[in-house]
Amino acid sequence: MHSHFIPGIDDGAQTMEDSLALLRSMSELGYSKVVTTPHVMSDAYRNTPEIILGGLEKVRARLKEERIALEIDAAAEYYLDFDFERKIDGGGLLSFGNRFVLFELSFMNPPDNLNNIIFKLITSGYRPVLAHPERYTYWHNKFEQYEALVEKGTLLQLNIASLTGHYSLSTRKIAEQLIEKDMISLLGSDCHHPGHISLIREARYEKALHTVLERGKLLNSSL
Image (cartoon, rainbow, N blue to C red; front, side):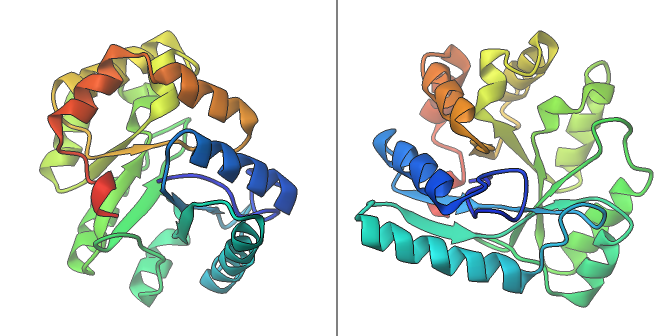
C-alpha cells in the first residue's frame, strides 16, 4: 500500500505507460495486490474521489488488456492542511481496508492540530494511518512523539525505501528503531517512479525488513 500509480493526477506516474511499467515491476517483485494512494492537497493536487476512482478504473482496464496479474485498489494520501478537517467532517474520505485513512504531514514543521485531527478521525469511525513517520526529521530527537501517536490510536506506515538509507541515515535509524520497538503496522512502497522500484529491490536484503515481516503482525495482508 501507499503508492502513486494513477497517471497524471499527482507527482507519481505521469502516463498510462508509466503506470503499467511500474505495476508490471511490482508484479514481477511478487506483489499480488497494491493499494494506490494519490496525493490530496488543497494547494497542489485537488483530487476528488471521482477523479481518483475514475482513474482507477482506467488502470484496471489496461491491466486486464495487458494481462498483468495484479489487483489494484485506490484510496488517497491526504495532506494535513486547512481543508483536511473539513473533508473529515464531510464524511467522504477515501479509505482502504478496515476504514484506514492515510495522511501525511509537512516535512518542515509539525502541525499544531495533529492531536485534534487524530481524535476527529477516530470519532468519525476511521482508523488514522500516518504515512512515513520516519521521514519527519523534527521528531528524530523526540522519539516519545511517535510513542504518543501510537498510544492515541494512530497506526504507523513505514516506507520500505527508508531502510536503505535513501532519504538519510537518520531516517534509516528511526525506521529501524520503530521496527525494533514493534510500532509499525503497515509497510508501503511510496512508489512514484522506477527509482523506487530499485529501492524496493535493494531493501529486500535489509535485516530490519525481515524482522518486521517475520513477526507476522503487519496489516498489509488484510487489505
